[in-house]
Image 1 (cartoon, helix red, strand yellow):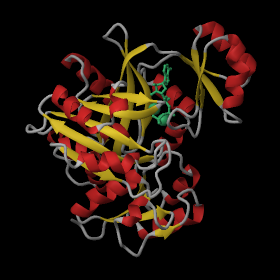
Image 2 (cartoon, protein in one colour; image 1 turned 30 degrees about the horizontal axis):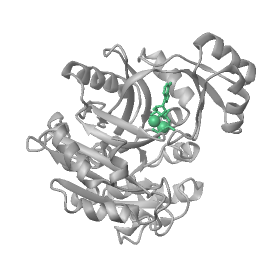
Image 3 (tube, protein in one colour; image 1 turned 45 degrees about the horizontal axis):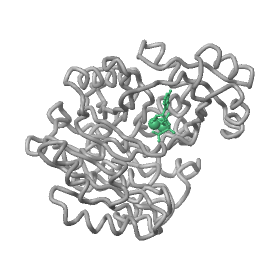
Image 4 (cartoon, helix red, strand yellow; image 1 turned 90 degrees about the horizontal axis):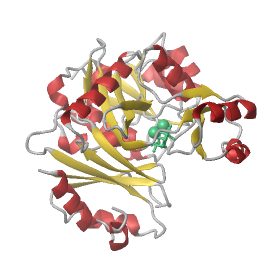
Length: 385
Ligand code: ATP
Ligand code: MG
Ligand code: MG
């Protein structure tokens, strides 16, 4: 590969770490901005990394000097700093895309202007506006923080008018908006790659199962009829086409109870938990796709298909449990499961709910994936499946 290419990455968590794994194989050099022993830096002994917060303006300016293209593993980023470096270095995806997507309300307004199917939503600058939204949409509805939301921490389901003050309080001082509650039958997600010349390619439609608002399991492909899988891929590609900039995007969607309609929930302008299965199950992973897309390396439709020898995958997140040994116990057991690949993120201490790693199980049917998954988990977890 062109040895002058240097990818600057804002954020060195597990997504940055897996980007680096992919970049290494392509001989693409990377520079990471984050804390000294972050997961990404642990696997790259390069001396050029920057020890600073990835939100720090000076660190971003320094990164621009060391990179030929700057990208990010997280959307909650300082987009003003990215805008100022964009005159001297490529920023992919564009700072304007990150700015729009990081504010869920702006993101939804933007998608609405392009006629992308969405749940109904409205602004909620004060309590009266939230009450009006309740009258308009009915109960329950979802009160959402516009900014800094992840793992459902910016959401509050309002079940009755009396809950409104509690909801506003629970979400703190953040700007809020309201979404109509979607009684979905399934949550799904599609990874979409957008190349530098604006072409888009969709990975298979996956089914995502959240536990306590955090992605827990991902089935690839989703257990849906073929035409619905295609419909979701089309919606996801149409949505990503509306944004500027290359890279991988994770598009979360709902399938409604009519079993036909698909609505978009939100977009992540970066690798996404629902795309981890691509490392084992597709010729080109979401991480490699991102590196290829932002550095202008070739990428085609064929890169996104499930490999013929794989056909089905099941990804399970390894979240820290009440028991501090839970993760290491499951991780060790995964090494005995056929078709299972373990990914640990190097995060040290296992805290409850912390994403410590993931395991991808591949097999020739979703039932076989599930059978292997059941032999992996603890007895008491089996009742929840
Ligand atoms: P992420 O970690 O995916 O970034 P987030 O904090 O941005 O999560 P959302 O994706 O908006 O939050 O919502 C989290 C979960 O809450 C969704 O996966 C879905 O299960 C549920 N949810 C979100 N919006 C709605 C809605 N309008 N109606 C019903 N359920 C919803
Ligand atoms: Mg989100
Ligand atoms: Mg989400």
